Each structure stands twice: as structure tokens, then as C-alpha cells.
Image 1 (cartoon, rainbow, N blue to C red):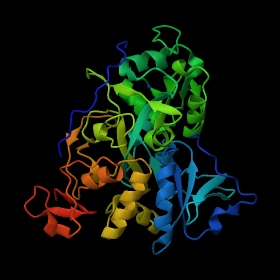
Image 2: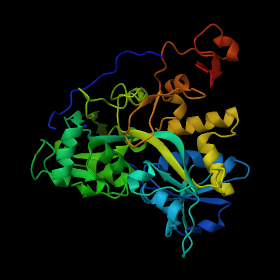
Image 3: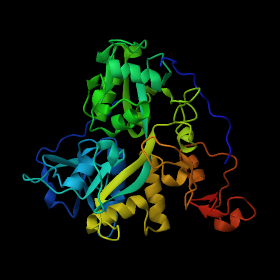
Length: 397
């Protein structure tokens, strides 16, 4: 599917609705008392996706209740490989999507599924033959600035100088004050991915460790010094808050200009990610213990993994899962045209087994003229290059 040339913004050569906290339960239930709880830990950026996945899994047979402990992406492989348990308070969602909390077991609960924005190697954890990394939808990482900032783009070289020196030397105006650099820490998948992109280890960054995505958003959107302020956020949080923050175009190493993830600052088509121009993206990593055949070794993990990878799902449930991924501002793998096998690694041409590019475009409001609707099924696609009707549109196969 061809498109017009996507806007490419000039980047710096030196080398831009507040989240509402869910109310706490007055008396939180025990997580173990929930029906068939599946314990998750890892990425804070994945929370919107888990919320949208919760309802279909609750409605499944058998029913699965997601219980989630947000700790940062790098806690995910650790929990699965080393058996590190989760304690304290868990988050779950009811059938209406209402966020609730529950008390984890005092001695800790064993994690069924780890969810990470980055490869385990980025966290210095090695999966053995007893664990497996299953790919879910694509997460996109962004450099953000307050909506009032006049900055529009930034380069890899500029980011290295800004975050590596914190304004002490090699300054890149206007980001010269370490107090306005809103970052995470080495357990964060968002920070680890950007660390790989710019070549600056996540543990060496200068800035204000805000702990989680929500705190980064609050600090950036509320800054009284907008031009001096930047932060890092995944698209699932950044996209729903574009009234208070802006996403900066990013010029990766070797590129001659910077790209937004989308075709413009007001669209959500992620075309520059899907076609390989925007660099900082990767699949959601769904990590579980597996048996000798590479299948999840407990039933709860197997059901969750099958849901995210669409294994054995009906066409109706595949559509439900695709809708959930789009609603969470991630990119279903079926809408991608490039793939990669390493953190911010080389990209290869990719054709999904069951493409859904036209459907994705229709959901985000940018369906191209070349996308043909097929209310009558496959017969509506006869004589076209796209011969199979999927989710109401003719696709390649």
C-alpha cells in the first residue's frame, strides 16, 4: 500500500489530559481470592494494554483474572528466570474495565507471565531453554516535551550529550538543566530502549528519576519551563495525552532528518514505525516458563500467551484482540511491514501471515484509497492484489 511521502523534520545537529490515578480500594481483597488469577509483572508502559486485554480474558473459558504488579520491564525476565516473587499491592480490572487493587500474599506470589518492552539481553538477563520470549504488539517509545514547548525535533547525538552530561558540558540548548530532564531508571524498558538507540547505558543517564510513566507525564506536562523540559514515554501513554505534551521528531544515527512515529503530529497511523523510518520501537515481550516443546508450562500462562500471539483464536477473538491492541495505542504485528530481532536493531521487510494493515488504518482514521472494503467477504476481493477479506478489508493474504 503506497502513501504520500511522510513528513521528515529537521533535527538538532549537535549532536519535542493528565492521567487520573485509579482510586484505591478502601479494603483491598486478597489477590489469591480472585477467580483463577494470573500474576504479571514488568513494564509500567504496558498497563493500558493489560487493561484492554483483561475483559476478553475474563470472558474466556476458563476465565483468567490478570493481576499486575508494575515494577519496570527488567523485573519481568528476572521474575521468570530467577523466580523472584511479587509482594505488596496488585492491580486488576473488572469486566467493565474498572481498575481495582488487591493484596498480594505476604510471602510473595509466583509470577506466571513477565511483560517487558525490551529484550531480556537489554536487562542483562539470559533466558534458558526453560523460558521463552513470545512477541506481542509493537510498543513505540518517544521523546516528549510540554505542549507549550517551541521545540519540534531532536537527534540521537543531541540526546547523548543532554542525557550523558546533564548540562555540565557539551550543552545542547535549550535542554541544559538537569532538573528538567524527566527520565526513568535502568529497570525501565523505555529507558533501556532509548539507551540502545543513542548508545548511552541506561544507568549512566543524568536527570530526574520519576519512577514510572505517570510521574514522567505529570512532570513534563506540568513544567513551568517548557522549552527546557523533555521526558521519555511509550505511545500508549503519550498518545492519549497529546493535549498536554508533544512528541518530538527523532533523527536516528545515520538519518538525514527526524521522523515522528506518525505521518503528522495529529494522526495516529504509526506509518513511520510500520514502514521502518522511526527507530525506537520493539515488540512487547511476553515471557513465560516453558516445557521441552517450547509451550508455556502452566495453564494460566499458556492461555495468556495464546491470547497475545493469537494461537488457536477464532476470527472473532482475533478481531477483539486486534481492537484491544489498537485501543491501547500499540501496533498489532499484523499491521507491521518491517521486523527486527534485536533492540533497535536492523530492520527487515516483513509480511504478516494474516495482514491487517487496512483495518488498522481504518481504526485510526487514515484508511488509504487503495484499501477496499469487503462486506461480502472474499468474493469482494476478486481481481485485486489483495485477495483475502480480513476484518472487513481486502488484504494481501
